[in-house]
Length: 332
Image (tube, rainbow, N blue to C red; front, side, top):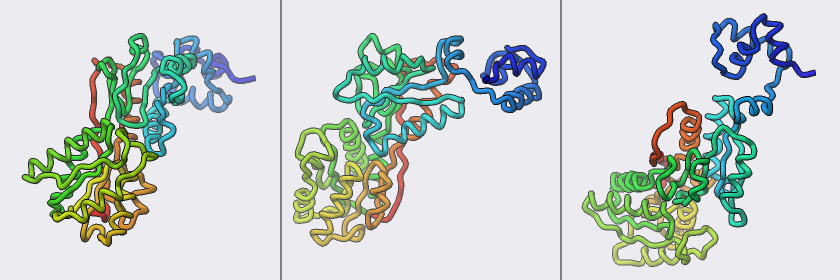
């Protein structure tokens, strides 16, 4: 039979409350020596926490539930889950996710998550966007990750897109580039904010964009939409004032830009420098030359989300913008 708290208490000569405090972080006061002895006895007896019984006692299980808004379909946005899970494990918690996609609404997915009686619930999105949560569900979501709640009723952690674009544009300018074009992501909040930072950096330096054009033919960016990259590169490189740098909306666009520039005989970075966003490592490090790009703060958002969800203090809803990291390689 599995060892119980009473078995450990009897062996250690202490109360069950003291054992629970030592193993589960309860309120019982004890010396570190007593705590260590109880943990050693629990290990010797092969004690395993009965999560179901613990959940009944305290009203929740040591879990963080995630409503994953298409998150698990994205190879690099899963860094959010990794950051969340790492911080949760430190607090002896576990993370589980339920996928939200076009066939299921947020209410049904959230209800599924709540059945597991998690300590807290997060809503995490595949890409930076605004989400309008139904009024009845707002109180059930502790934090929004990689998205913001449309009415500001839930604390949100989002990437600082505008500052990232400002920083990498300044990096291009510092490298002596003056004629900078931007092949952007149409219809996305990230694209809108990045363009704002791009234009701001150029304006402050006394320059104008050589061009700002969409990466795809559709009004909203998708990596499956018909690409316009080749057409734009042909037009830019045949213009009287050719760009000496191209900023790309993401690393997939940068990959296309590399191919298109090579087709017209332009060398990277000698003739044209290339910068980007996301730091999809399997792309950025394998391009020749390796790509300079702004790394999304996904893992940092996950870690901070866990800290906020498990923290003792309750703070008013707010939006926190986390900085990207410039990953400097050989394309600039």
